[in-house]
Length: 351
Image 1 (tube, one colour):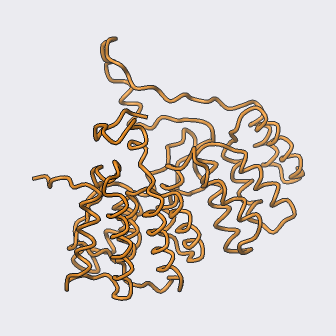
Image 2: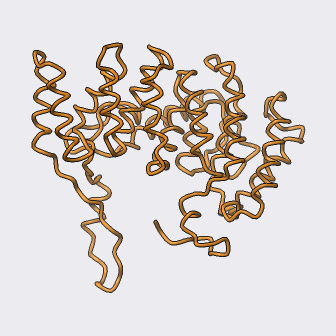
Image 3: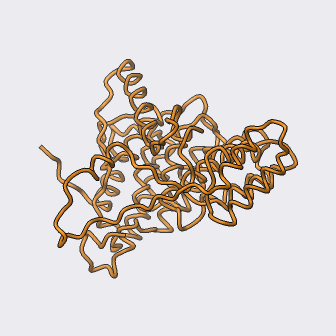
């Protein structure tokens, strides 16, 4: 039996009312602040078209997540996770979550992802490789000519210079400046690079070498989700090893591009489960600026978590600030942006 779908506005109201109940498991020191922000959300966006959209992850008071990974999985997949009854079930659930997060990467024709969603074994940037499921969909009988088929994603074939880049990287005696010259030649033709080149730039940008700035700038010139992942990895490693320097701030711009906002938010959500507390602070600040109204419930569920040993002293304050920024910005989801006016139907035209 399916539960009735509630709107974002109804979900915010339900969360705010729950904060006054005795069974509320929100840390007491954050209840008043959360209630104030939820009140701001309700009063500011009660007439907002986005607030009338269905809530993909409605509030469940009985669900008590014990780890960040469970919250991330629940909100990333839009699925209802059953209540965890004991510690053994919690450990098993977390292992299942980590296995499913591995499958978020696009499948490569030559290499299979081995680690988490930001693993280095990811497909070539600029190429679009169909997964097994998508390939089976293509093999099905085609609909009649009158029916409008969905647009197919173009497959971008590798450039000849890509082979030269990979060969130069593989030879240890080749100067890295020669590699940079060939990378620049490739980027002048197309804003895409082979995966080995992205890994090279990621490693150099995260290092303390004099060419770190050059590598970071080349990452900024790349396009596509794989380049964003490489820049995010370099940002994380450099922040951990070098601190918040100029190059870290430059790499941060990769996730602030309006054209790739949806992909950036997806990556930010996944990386908030990492073990680098300073990096999580940076990601929360970005989520506050890039997130949409649907992300309010996600941050609220993160605030419900019990304190962890690797939590930064300012992390809870950063969550509240991100929640407040989302309430003030009131960004629409993509489907809401496509609606011509507030009187449009709940399902707007496809992007």
